[in-house]
Image (cartoon, rainbow, N blue to C red; front, side, top):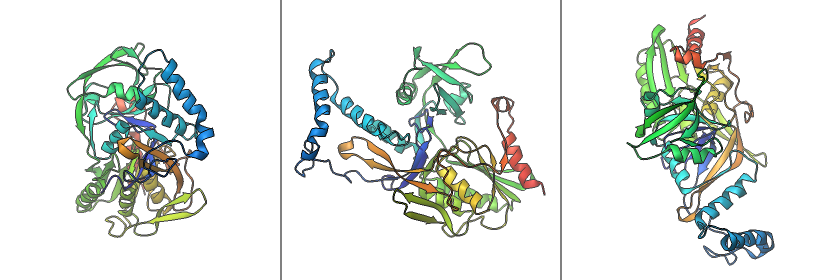
Length: 407
């Protein structure tokens, strides 16, 4: 799959992966376009140039400010690339849309790498929506997990430096580093009186997008961590292996899954839904485009299905969950999902200058439900607390098993 021309639906920056990439409410539904798709705007129609003639009055204050910075700022020379990137960032932020962003070249590369399943860093998902950067889940086998980081841990310092007033991207950059190097994080942990330091050796982290196993009572369990480039085939292969064992029920775990490729979400949903609409995409003018289930699903019959979700299940996860819920194919168990229901267009800028990630539409469930900022309400509510995790318990999984095994 060409990641520059594929639709993606990640949360759009609510949770962040402290590996290379940040994702915080997911990438949102979107499309990657090839480099050079949109030429630079110029006054004479060329490929590079100045302000278009009809925009000269509008941009006069910008160029005046640019000149003042270059002539008056105390520390010269200034970094023109950073000024340019900051200007684009300010422009997009002025839209007031949390899911429209300018991605610097590094962030664009990082977000691309995220969907390829390999990262460099400490290996933990974090929530960037609050005042402090908060661990939501260490990746299994990662340096973060080995160092003892837990869900709910809040990062207040990196290498002894206070980061509580920095934006999420700046904090992410400080945590990242060369594999083999050491970073010291100062942690606030609920229930622990004083902050404490954790030293973590960074590493290259390869995360499987799908894991699976058979549970007691002949229940097949599959967990998808992200809807990446290899997820469709991995999921199909692992589901096929489990179906050969004649399970009496299936649990699909989408907790803490911020999304991925739209095609992958449709492929996964199609393993359970034989036909019909998986998701609608609604443009600003009200027109709708439907995405249909593909044929060949392995579990489209009567085998009972439960989907585990929580507050970090977003975008692609919500598309799959919403389709399964709306079609009556299965039940949702857990907590209300994140509520990421807008579609973003990812447009790489010319000359490797990053990418625009901008909202262009909304997506709707098969029944036409709008879930943006609303989320999906589970059919069976179940919570998972920090105390449960510490005790090695999983009441949400227990509730899913009970749903499948209770007449």
